[in-house]
Amino acid sequence: MIGRLGKGWLWAGYAFLYIPIITLVVFSFNDSSMLSVWGGVSLRWYYALVADEQIQSAVWTSLKIAFFSASTAIILGTLAAFAISRYRRFAGRTTFLAHINAPLVVPEVITGLSLLLFFVACENFFGGVSLRGMLAIWIGHTSICTAYATVVIQARLTEVDRSVEEAAMDLGCRPFQVFYLIIVPSITQSLASAWLLTFTISLDDVVSTQFLMMPGTTTLPVLIFARARLGLDPMINAVATITVILVGTGVAVASLLLVRQERLRAEAQAAAYREAVLAARAG
Amino acid sequence: MPSAATATPAPDRSSGVLARLQRINWGRKTVIGVPFAFLVLFFSLPFLVVLKISVSEADGVQFKDLVDFADGTLTLRLKLANYQFLATDPLYLKTYVSSVIYAAANALICLFIGYPFAYFMTRARPTLRPILVMLVSLPFWTSYLLRIYAWKGLLDDNGVVNNFLLWAHIIDAPLKMMYTSFSMMIGMVYTYLPFMILPLYGTLVKADPRLLEAAGDLGTTPWKAFWLITVPLSKAGIIAGTMLVFIPSVGEYVIPELLGGPQTLMIARVLWNEYFQNVDWPMASAVAVIMVVLILLPLVLLNRYQNIDGRAEAAAARPGRAAA
Image 1 (cartoon, rainbow over the protein chains, first blue to last red):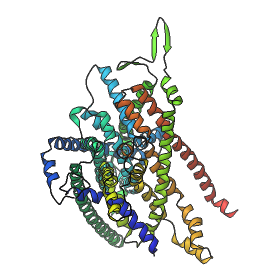
Image 2 (image 1 turned 120 degrees about the vertical axis):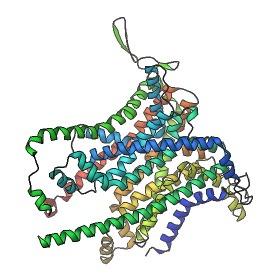
Image 3 (image 1 turned 120 degrees about the horizontal axis):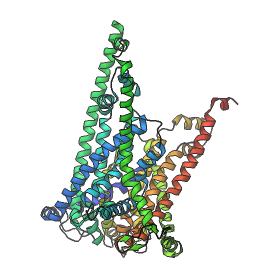
Image 4 (image 1 turned 30 degrees about the vertical axis):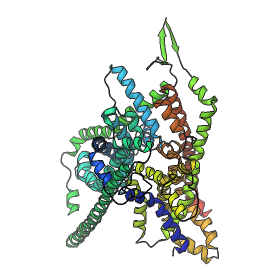
């Protein structure tokens, strides 16, 4: 059905996408410090990684920032997605939409620069309190992440059946109860994927972080970027291999959970349907 | 069962209407206001600061106020020298043009590779398709910085690609690939290809295969049917994919910095250097303002085009027109 050309094109495309990642992993086990020369299998770069305190503190900083940015972003993203999908008309809706989508379009060098200059202006205004560092990075990442979280959550929210919400309202639920008891449970999955997505975006961010950081708040990408600029460093390969393993396991676990959840939901739906049919017949 | 519940009137509904309305309004205000306030404060306002600094006179690290009230007269001081310099200095102009050209080339190459790729994905067995889609999006989840770094090891003078070509006796001396526009383009295409493939796949998979069958029954060659049916049906995907690749490419910093050569001109690098190396904040701000204009322009055009297109389609879909 695909034909030889199609198969070849797909294979070549996937090779293009995956060969760089595979070489990264393979060369992390290289004993030679020359990245391109194979010097036998060894774990020396992993030992070096364990001994490198600079990298460890950077990992810790990155994880903290990513956790807080992702968590704030999904709260803001849920509110924004709710506003977009449920309030069809309100004053300033176009401006609101533009604000939500802008961080997706505006290059990060600009987001970073403008937020930095804003914080510097605030520092001058309030008299010397330093705002740059963790707080600034957190805010910067949150505004980028909110845009992505909104897109993911909104896609799910528009799918949720409105009639259930209306029924709950008719039965006397308050708007907040409707949100908490009906909407949140039905979008949990998208909340989880939005959180994971924004967590990885924040964990990966180098450009805006570079603008907003202070010497004490070096994140892992900033460190990797600084070292990668200087040349090839096999320790970066070791970091890459660990990420690939973590992501691979994460994706495997997530897809298993997803399959299980889908099955449970289908079963619950079928049971509810049977019950409804029986009740209708009895009534 | 549910019918019985709806039949009973909700308790004290009439007396609570006002309170309930107020509560809805209040909740609605929070839902809209909180994210709005955050983004206005930390996204738009900072950009206004950039706009202000781009026309301010630097006074050490402080900037003079734009509006000055002295001796009973209000004076507005705008320094447009930065913009004048940007417009007249050939290097900046060249950099802007080359950023747009690199980004457009990236979008075209991604379209050329991605369109057949997405098309063949839709031709695969339906059970295989989710796995194929997942394999395209999976690299997103690993750090893009690390994936760009990987190309450094591949394209280096004695990197994997050169070593392989030497070993296979295809070349006699290592090729100079790293730190050129070539290595940067490879990095760009590699990074942005999934952004092209996924929206294209999304529209192509929805196309009704019966249309192609009908065209075939009516004697159209498959190639002609592809151009007359499949391509027009995937127009939305082509536009979305091209925009998703083009727009972030214009402002790309990490890829040209890690893979490009000193002669590869990209505007984000200029902004970075103005800020970090020359510490010229007003200049960096002016570059930023022009960059935003450069990126907004295609978006505004696209928006207008889509609106016109959408109206035309809506008009065509009206039942009255179909009968006429």
